[in-house]
Length: 188
Length: 378
Image 1 (cartoon, rainbow over the protein chains, first blue to last red):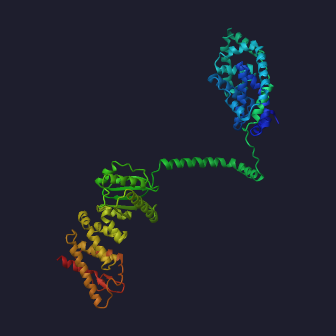
Image 2 (spheres, rainbow over the protein chains, first blue to last red):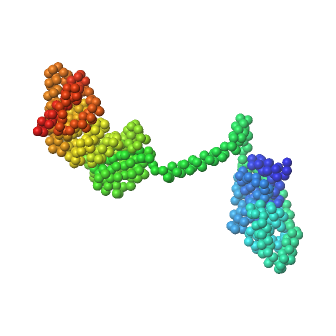
Image 3 (cartoon, rainbow over the protein chains, first blue to last red):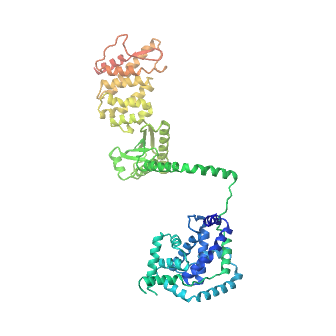
């Protein structure tokens, strides 16, 4: 059984099996969180958008149809939509997560631990000054270019993967990246 | 930076950029716990062996069935659309409402009004301000009745006449009776609701009768009493006399009440069969096509009939009225009428004389009746 086939089965099981969904979550959490951090340069905001991404994935996994692309591509697409939505509409980003917190309950005992973890992450991020400088320049581009450049260079996805995530043909994605880089060149 | 070199340099810079790789295990675990505890997961339904078997059969059949199902669906949608938008509704009945005004409506198989026409000037004036097309027939009747009431036309001395007849073959006698009852009930309920006391007469007719009456310029009010007294078939024969004998519409309409009374009297009081009564009426009209002395002719014919019957009674023949007279052969009667001119009636010989016989063999000569009418005229 190849990886795709096993991921397909896992996604099918994840529709009604929390353990299967948990496995997919573990496999993709870190990648999505870091993608969000690298897009936003803000750990706390990235946490919220990551949480929102997985809440939406959980809510919609029943309607998810396997079409050959990886599950992670679907998660990147959700995360990208959430980020776009955040940049276009501003705050109000954690409605679903708050709902889950209220209905399922978050463990308040670990609040201090979480705060420590957040501070440590922000300190760690601050050490990557060159990256933050680049990110700041990229953030001045239109969102469509930000998306394609961060997926290519910050999430290290191939052009084929980016095309799947954006739902665009590979050639279009390549042109988009090329134009984005040409625009970005002005800021260096 | 400019040029291709700068572009490649930027690309290289981004490729080699050291990226932050942040792990947040506590937050990850907390979110995981929250997500997995949610009720978003579908319940897994394990089919029973029987369900599994049925599903397997359905799934095996489905690939072959899909094209058929798709074709049928397209066909149904096409036919449905065609039937709904491109075919005219089928007219099954005609309803004439006479108060006066006189209004005629054609009705579809779904009891909807297809057309509404005024049969006189008042009817046309009334319909000019009412929109009855596509209304349910009951609703249309309520609208008409309401308009008539507002115009003060539902006064107690008036009479509402409803005449219904089928159009085509799709409405059977039973269906027509149901529709007629429905129409009558609607009018009665409206009048009761408005506390109006008015005579309502409803009649189920035939298309032939309506057509014949229409040719003579008659409206339902002119002949509903005749229909009620003698039934649709005889009423139609009476109305057909107008065409058969080539009468003027005005005089026929004027004398129709007299004809109606006469035929009722001949049948009910003198005990004649329908054919006998019709023959006398016909001969009387033939003798006086302008119907100027129709009453006298009718009386004379009737008296002769009485005398003949009295003579027969003397010779111990059964009295008229004691036995029901036979209906003469229709073909013979028609042949007689078509062959013999009114004023030139040949005296029949013993073998060929046309007679109207009673059940017991008592007979009187039609010739005698005709002769008496001729004598009267002379």
